Image (cartoon, rainbow, N blue to C red; front, side):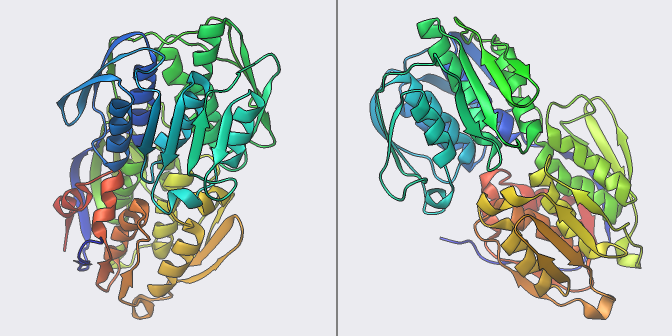
Length: 440
């Protein structure tokens, strides 16, 4: 059921401080790692959203000992195998839960049936399943080949040969294999070698995975981006207390506000030592004309005032490393001084929606001229204020569409966001925070 439309009247200025919710990428990785690790982990700053609730519900159903001290603090006592080994588990549209749990349960053993919403059943998982089958996992498609839902049964796992996984569709497939590998390496004292076939996309997300695995006591040997080795006997051990960084992808919207609404906007929860690749979006904003200042625990953005006719610098940029934050750049193209091109964004096609199609369609509604291809998008901003058109923006049940198009309220016409509550996937309070920062 969709939520009522949200009308955003034009605004001219943005300033203030925002404390980010926890990173989705870090939160769901850490929740699973803590469940796999021996000992107790106290996790602080966990994102409270649809995706993390799905992961937590799945872990509870699996018999993991878990308690919530608050909406953002979780205590987990882990260890493998999990207590329940014959279950149906519903995982919504949470790729950061579905892919890693598929790999972990396949290597752990048992009988599990994993499913999600209709869109999750359209998101490819074939490359991960193929890789797990190479190891001897028994995984069957119960719908369309290559897509969830899945039936996972105990298989004869053997890692005597390297396992190969394609890297050009989603980095979550490699992340899933890496996170699951110590289950086998520890129980069977056998190393697991993972080789990447072709170009690996979204490399910063793999660095997040490796960093967090190390926090839980497993050091992965990396040979470039093509070969990863988990040593025989590798086991996860609870690190004690672990703090989750603020979400760098969500930071992109607020740094963008400071960039187009004069600022300053200070975004707390990430800093210059963040382990998240999307923090590099600040470099993109600098190239577009923003003044970015990086501190230990926050980043500040000051910029132009587009409501007064000031422009951002146009760009032609490869966004392969930061595909989520790149969506924010596409929205900012509305305020550029010329055509803007986003390249190497093919992964957008298999996200919560086909984001290239969605962005193309909705930006045109506002008066932009848009062209796109398999892995690129070019946006020509409206020629003048009169060329802008008031529009109802469809969000496609995609949280990032709703948050990106909030930035369109700096144009000269009202903008209506359909189903604004879809932001609950990662940032349930987004529009309340947004309103506190902007003014007419």
